[in-house]
Image 1: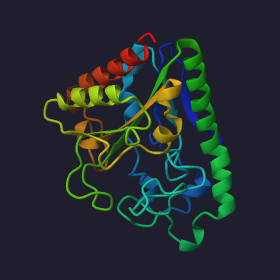
Image 2 (image 1 turned 45 degrees about the vertical axis):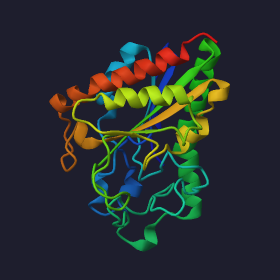
Image 3 (image 1 turned 45 degrees about the horizontal axis):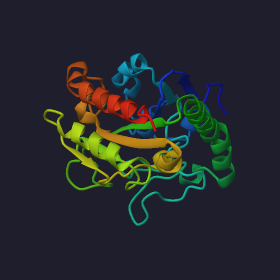
Image 4 (image 1 turned 120 degrees about the horizontal axis):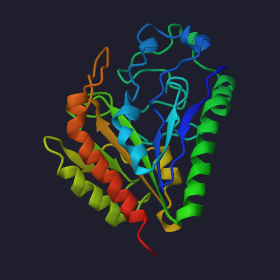
Length: 269
């Protein structure tokens, strides 16, 4: 289906893994040919996250970044496609519409079949999650405890999913199930100090499949999702450009949060 690996991986030494499941932009030609012109622009990408978090390498973090667009397969959905937010509008494992609720496929007959969904899951979803699991296990074996930071971004105004403007820093811990409460509260306090930015814990976005599935604080794996507004660091419309000066205003807060996570999992006992 593609010659491009499902992910790019940097192995670090610290007990911290950054996951970026929606940063990929590649769509295999056979799929792209079926998409609308709008969809081929992959507007719902979590743009520029590796650049925004470039400081994490110097912190010793491992970094796992998807290469393929979420339009191919959504790595932050359960493998069976079950809804993460029952009763609310969501996109699926192999989406058929954009965040603006417009069709991805030019011809409705071209939406992926069950067999194609299974193939995409095996080709892209499974390798990403196998690498994620293996790295968490490796780091936990080395350090005793490990943190998983699932990094996301989204347009600040999306009527399909929420009313008004989204808070800038949306921390999600699966309603408290994926990481220790003292850590979650500390992260929220740090987020609240970000000049000119708003924040919330377990608001509209409480963490997707990755956070909820891998976070096991009782077993030494503390998982946190950060869904941040794209206007905090980039243009929210085409050409979706990175804005270095704006990004520089939020990066110190991101670094403080990651350092707090590291300090927490490094505590003895």
